[in-house]
Length: 358
Image 1 (cartoon, rainbow, N blue to C red):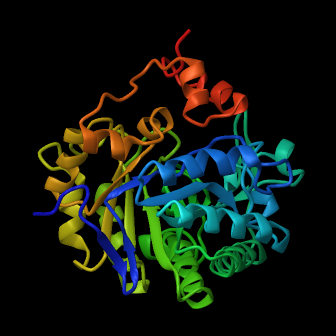
Image 2 (tube, rainbow, N blue to C red):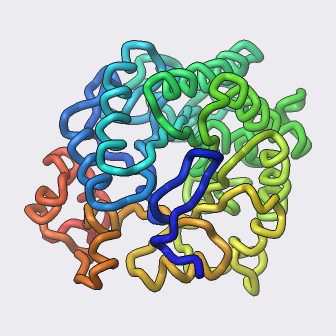
């Protein structure tokens, strides 16, 4: 019987020790230039030591113009290699596989942080955000940058990379019928709107064939992810499986709920039916307890990715193995520091309502 502590083979000779993974978490702890800091290394290393089977980095920008917030990890330049190599080595010593989440903010990049103009699928203007439509050259540079970042991760000793195609960032923006109003080969039909993420998957596959390749998708609209349709996302998943995707990471926000478009159906069985059995499915979304995690496996997921529960509990896998109590919200700031968060990360988590105790 498959359980949370059953090892999971991702590709030949790449096996996670269990099915409990650390989700990619914004933590604001990298240096201003994108290089790894001691605080970020400490936070991630505690979770490898705490029993997580695979550790994902925070969303890491593949180009300077895609940088979206301060303290963001960079994979955009060879100057990042020493830190990335050190990170992979340290997390491996804790027994975990290591994956970098590669992303470009697009419309959600921040010129105040990057120093560069933002661009996306189409021009966009509102009270808070302005960006221009990307040119053919912009698009090709982004594809090349994702591939170069994956190559760096392979050189640094990572096991995997994940393309962030969720949460309304650049790859998701091109998929969106709201953000993508193009009339050329990169917009209009689903085939055209999916062209960027498909070309990126193929480029990364060519650039770093040794790495396990994951893609994170938002199945439907939620928060900044807009203009997404469940049935279209199922089609995109099928396309990406054909292109070489090894893992589909479903970002569900509240994984206990069924889909909005099909209230009678949970997302996991829909995607499990849509894609080949060799493509693994990992699910994230408000998973706090062992029972909630096991429910996702029962739906057909191969693994679960923990976010806030992992922030509050660096050794969540070991705690549930022992049937020990876990920290639940609200969590005292001193407790979070003991779990490996820096003061900057604790302050960032205060933005999440009720997470940090008053």
